Image (cartoon, rainbow, N blue to C red; front, side, top):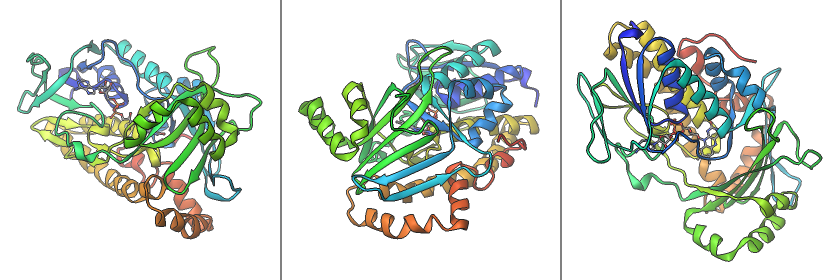
Length: 396
Ligand SMILES: Cc1cc2nc3c(=O)[nH]c(=O)nc-3n(C[C@H](O)[C@H](O)[C@H](O)COP(=O)(O)OP(=O)(O)OC[C@H]3O[C@@H](n4cnc5c(N)ncnc54)[C@H](O)[C@@H]3O)c2cc1C
């Protein structure tokens, strides 16, 4: 398909929307992004770019920039709180790694790529609906309708208003804070470390590199919390939280003392990828999960890249959408299912599931074949999603 003739409207300047816009515009398509924010800006703290997402960035020519700001991660390691017992041990295998990066850093890299590729931004433009058809449109708050396009994309993330079902919110969310990385501290610079108390409390420390060139290195500190407890947490004050943190993981008290945490709520849904004629959902708008398996940002990058290869190989938009769904569906189904099954073992009120996790699952994951399998699952590479979308290059 000739990209020069394509007009694409994207709702949502997140990881999926920005990467798709940059790839489309750099191939000659006319792209407009509509976002609710007054200026495009990231939400949240940091996350791990897995080899899957890194391969997409590499094809976009942006991986070096991301790697320069991020921190190499080669191990994920979790222990029971107050004990030395390891219940999560995941390595990346030979010469492979993840890149932990601040959301603000990746956002900045993608935004610059989109702007320089010629994408038009319309900010303070909150989408409330989308209308399918030969020339689909996006309906904005206030009743304005965007100019008709060849394809309209819902990249509005987990809380997209298109087909929103409130009951899909999970009971547990987390406090997330970006804090200075303690250079001589007790944490390993290339590891995601976690501590668990049953399944009701999970804390983690992830080194996430620098927000921009020359800035200080930072870490993401997260602390799981039931959504219904957020008001009580706020009202009880910082000292009470610090005392809890000290009991669970004393080394992280300095983070809790200075953190300005944001409370993130999670959703689990797998919506229909096609929301109407020539209306496509990508990223969390299609498939949202708790960040337990750490795949969401990588999945959004894969969705965007898959649509590009499908458009490149198809004569019509309809054929491209069919091919895109064939390329992505199985991988998404697998990770949505795994996330749904695994999340209650780490974030729930269950007393039985964490016991099963610690006694039965944790030792099994240390068997040689299982180690390899789990490693491929966590790196997002199970079912070879990169090959499925027609990218053959691996980034090691
Ligand atoms: C706390 C937390 C930790 C995470 N950790 C990881 C991790 O370690 N690894 C990983 O891979 N993923 C992680 N994720 C998931 C990852 O952030 C998401 O999967 C990813 O950002 C999804 O990208 P997206 O483009 O679909 O949506 P988003 O990046 O959420 O972007 C959505 C965009 O749509 C805009 N928008 C929303 N509503 C409207 C509207 N009505 N009109 C116009 N614009 C709108 C928003 O302003 C935003 O710019 C985490 C998520 C959270 C919340």
